[in-house]
Length: 235
Ligand code: 6GU
Image 1 (tube, helix red, strand yellow):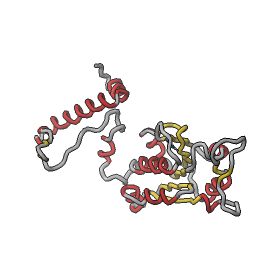
Image 2 (tube, helix red, strand yellow):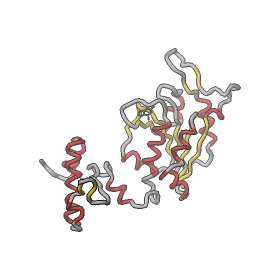
Image 3 (cartoon, protein in one colour):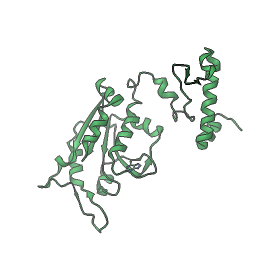
Image 4 (cartoon, protein in one colour):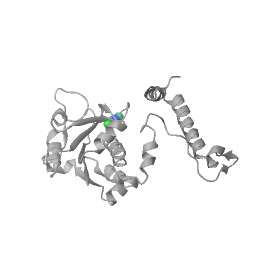
């Protein structure tokens, strides 16, 4: 069983998101275990402070090293195959390759802080992976930690029933996913493409691939070019 631990001043948010849907199912199936370490309860300060002013001046408060180190050190039985993730906009940008790589760890520990707000010694001494979820700024590391957890957990064998579904997902290969339809075949005069009702699986597969290629070319020229190159195709 994989252990995913979160060190955070806002564990409520993390608990809510991990106790819903697929993330909760993975826990019920005993494939993963989630562990929440409330940063305040590791403070050695009499007022339970966890942050202080930055040396050298500047805006905002900085999370102190002590509560984070103490929370980290309270986690016993950490495997050698562990990754310590610090979500931060100046980290490596998350993609499926990084998700797959992280999903192979036995223990994953998230240190949720604030971009300009964590003592650098935490990043230097404890963190193995600094990860960004995109080029925009969020207020804290909790939402990115949940995003990263979600993408990791769904890749662990046994979590999603239909692994083929995960494999045809956008970004697993180079192409975006095709359009999907379900019953009824006519809804308010809007018809499902005939080929999908034909039962001709060769034609259906051709349609799906064409749909994926067209969508990728329009929306993500970067991925489309990669697809052409990887499949030795020229336009
Ligand atoms: Cl990982 N953290 C924060 N605070 N903002 C972000 C981010 C992470 N990735 C994109 N924006």
